[in-house]
Image (cartoon, rainbow, N blue to C red; front, top):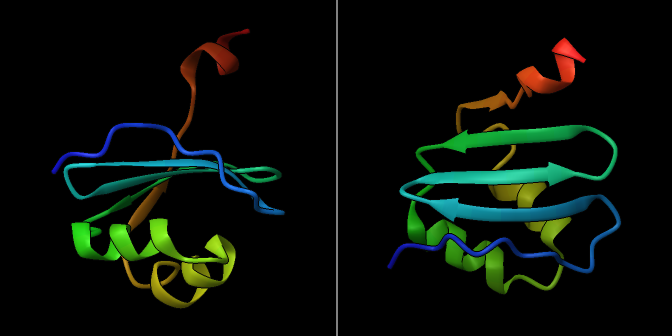
Length: 78
C-alpha cells in the first residue's frame, strides 16, 4: 500500500507527516521539514498506530534511518 495522505497528529511537536515509497516526511512544529529514507512500511504503520507519535519517533525512527532537512528554494530566494 502507498500512503500519501498528510496526517496531522495530536502531538506537541510533530505538525504533520506522510509516507511514500519508503520515505517518511515529517514536519516539526519548531524545527522544519525532514525526509527520513528507507523507512519500511511496517515501521510507518506502527508509527501511524502509535498513541504517542513523538515517543515512537524518538525510539524507532530518529537515529535509525538516514535523513535530510527539506530546504525550500522559494523561501531562500525571497
